[in-house]
Image (cartoon, rainbow, N blue to C red; front, top):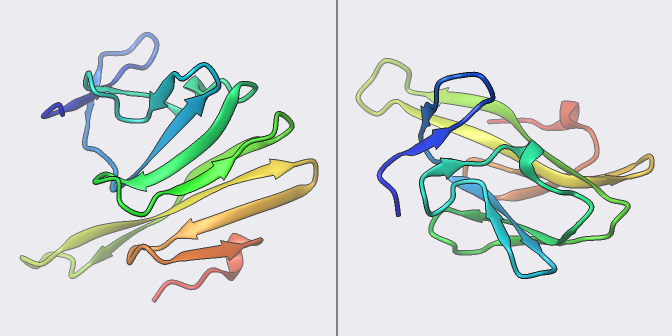
Length: 134
């Protein structure tokens, strides 16, 4: 596993990026796996996903335990965003930065979204405004 990952944006210098706690992988029908943080140190953006071909999307903690697997239909549009960045104990030695990851899919007007909370709890939600963070 690389010590550092780089994000390459068109026309810009590479940006060094720290890996996310929860990461995505896209498993294609032909066996190819596109990883958000690949084994060569490259960070892939969500726009790198060919959403017409995936067989399933996998979201997992970096150590690969307890993955969330979404099986795929060609009419699905994948959803993935970071909802909130939370800072606890700001300015203290125990300061920590946490994130809520939102994953899911949209099919027509129907959306299925899962919010992965900082404690790894998964909440099925239809409206992010209803999500309360303690």
